[in-house]
Image (cartoon, rainbow, N blue to C red; front, side, top):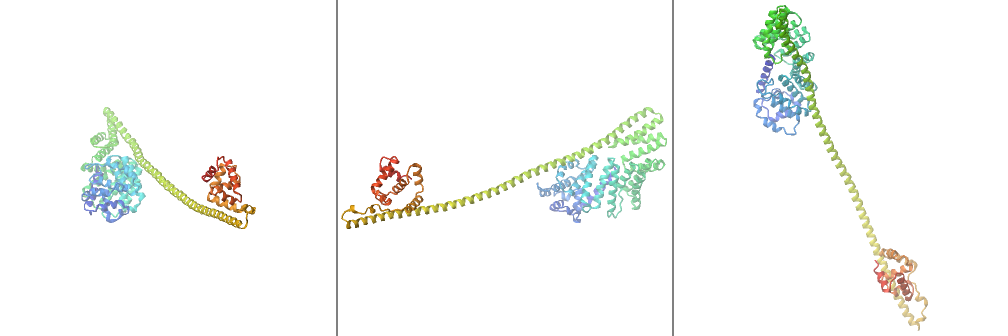
Length: 586
């Protein structure tokens, strides 16, 4: 088709420019993909073309090197740019001669779902939409091109050239026309023209394709004057820019007059329509445009039928029929051809042929209606498919976020627990250290007290010994002074060596020195009197009867009696057993 031919011419011209471009290092290419702000930098203009048309031969050898710069954890947008560049390089987006990339482009959707960069996604959906269009997946083309347009508008004009906006609007308008959404086609087509006219286009080349689509879309909705206006923009621009004589523009010049003829035919201006349709037919035959040849033949057949010239109508309709097998989509045009053949044969009385063509007409009407219904279903399926991919990616991210939250929560809990554990341990350790210090001090104090008590007991025993010496000295003096010992004063034998205060002090010192003695003997022998306890304490200190007598201020016989009484109370057979028991009590 002529539109495809025109697109390929544009692509080839850009590829020629890219082939002459400066060779960038692999690092520069990856940096360009990574940094969005560079995409409007003039020095990177050639790299921008790499995204449109792939890498030139001079850069293809760098693929392995570029791939090594993109690690496993690289930003998904860089991976997406790299994959797009690889697919477009050496491929024909129309899918005729070089490797087809339709399936490969669709397979990048899961990767695209991970990309959060609007700039990268706008590029990807633009290419995916174009690939879907040339593959014949028109509903997918519309859906993905609309996503691309929305993202381009979101990013804003400051990040793109006017040409980029013009092209992406054109691609969407073209796909909308093919899916018969003519009003939206006109809306986006007018935007494409707007940005096309804002470009610094020194050659003033007309936007033929966009004016052609706008003319056709207005014709479909009955806006014939508007349709003719857009078609005339093409012919006027070719004339004003003196482009006639160039085969490409000669074709479009004559072909556009054929389109104007179609608008006149739709507006029932038959006499004005026929010569223009014949110009369009001749141009289509000359440049081997089979689709438009078939359509112009059907238009002329319809004019002859309307004029009542049935044989001429049948002649042109049959010529149009010969082109049907060469068309991909022939439901609507085939129905129109067989409608003319059915009506003309019916009017001529050829009822058998009329019935045959009526059946064919009904058959292709159903085909056309089926295409419309399938188009609606494909549109829904496409949207559901992509939404499902996004949902899966959202669920994946949600699961990752949940796991991350759980992991972070566990880490935070462990850290918090460790902090509290450390705090509690440090507090416990501090308390234990304080307890140890207190116990050490208490132990030291008790040891000091015991030491002091033992010292006091030694002093006590020493006093007893000194008092014994004093008594012995007194007795010697007495003997020297008195003839008879029996005449010694009674008070000497009953000399009290320890007072109550002395006993209390002695008891305190004894208890400090031997803290277990009194509690133990009391627990074993609760019947003991205070005198028994004093005697037991003196026996424990290993004092003999004489020392005990002097200490207690009693006679030795009284000490013996006291020991016998204590022995009986404790159930011992002899005094020796009693003394051994008390001495080894603790």
